Length: 286
Image (cartoon, rainbow, N blue to C red; front, side, top):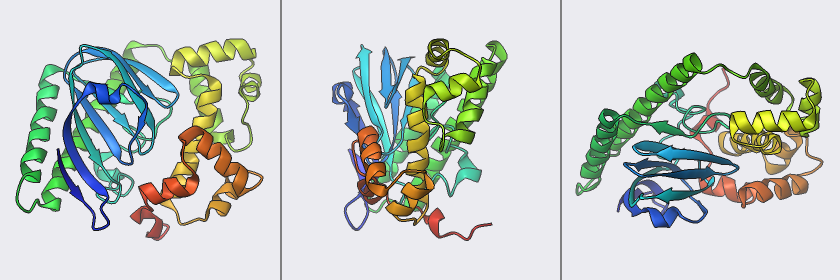
């Protein structure tokens, strides 16, 4: 295992080849996590979503997301982890465009299917990172550059794969409209029946369409959208827990904390303590 730490002992960047059995049970990592699976197939579980995969593939998860693998013939996995204090994906959005594409998107699949050539490129980047981490005094500038290249390359491939999927597969326009409605009304409409009515669907039919299109039930997607906004405010602002609860239309911070912990398994304060407050929180609003 190769890694660097902050002065307080936090893992800022970690690179490790792990046995896939480590991921056979639900686990939460404090860092952004990328898994390179060279071969084998299985199902990647990330919070409420379940995604069939076959290597070579990159799998992505956000801090404290609950993940695990069900798999066949996946012996080892390359793991890359980084903390937001080491590389802030929101601050570097213009360079890598991975926030909302590789991470923090409840609507699209959290993976990238790789060609053999692409798999070799990412294997090489792992090697470059590993070689720098083994130096007596690793350069954080060099490590960030390699990580940024890794993320930018991943985002580019993901964007193209989405374009190709859109060209090959006909979109379910009602489910696309559901996404728009949810992003608009998630603070006030929190039941599947609310969106079924807006879409002029029966609740049962809406649930089937939604589960087929997103690999998640409507209830889970609605819940994830609210929690995603909560995580965003906890990480990207200096608002108090009480202020965040108020902005998300909860009756008080205690009810907000119960709902947040039920989904994430940690309290809002613990989430903030572990992930930290981004440098974006102190940037002037444009």
